[in-house]
Image (cartoon, rainbow, N blue to C red):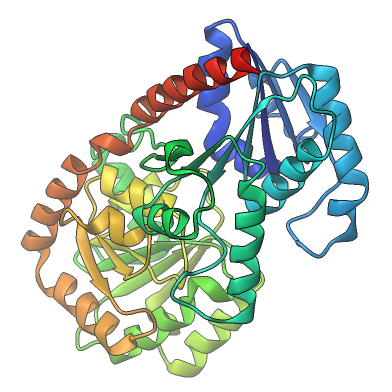
Length: 382
């Protein structure tokens, strides 16, 4: 069997898809990847039989996505004679499916799309959301199997009839390595070292948020909530970078809480930060199935999360607490609760790890193998 994995940018491949490439190559498959930046990704290349660079972007209005990229996708697929093309991320998924739908029918591979979180929200009537929903319905006609990774998107796909029900598959995420993210993966001295380096006292309640600084992650809510907490010893660490970082730093200074916030930047290993925390935070307005929440729960650290799709799925078994998006008073109250109840937080973390079995990467790889077996049947019937 020959498999082509397609994403808009190589960072998605690096973050989520390398275990899949390794597994199917070990079974004797030919596995290739198509993404922007993939040829320059030294980590990615050894995991594939071949990688293909493509000039497209995450911006759905970029003309390159509908001009040169269509031709390039057709060329790569025709030359590779793939049995399965598995697409991820909205732009790459739409362009690739369009390219194959309007290309030659002979030798067309089975097309699988994993929606990491639909761009639309079904309850929203905004024109933008309606347009994204329409595009998903259109591209659904060109899709052999659709995978959703949270229950909200699964229900949306059914309601909108994006694909026939027998071609819709729910999978609990894209997989997380529970062995790597475990309470014992980092020693106590390493956790203590993180606190010392950040200037956080040994007994200060510490909260960690791992997220890119962009408006949708709503770091600003954390700053406001911290200023409204009753517990003045609590500290917050932001792990990540992005275009909004300076604005959040300025907000922290103007709010008077800058001494209680640390900006750790990008980190190659987030485990010491997670395991040093009383709880982790994710205040996003929209997610698919957030990786940072899964990693925290696997480490046995509870999560304070906004009540949105994906996060709601993950915390439904009691691994944390939810609050309404943008409700900074509710967020402040939860921060205070975790700060004042360390034993309850610890017990919640133990329960959190137990809830993560179904999200383990081994389980997800097995589910993909089963789906690809179905794809093999579809291929032989064409």
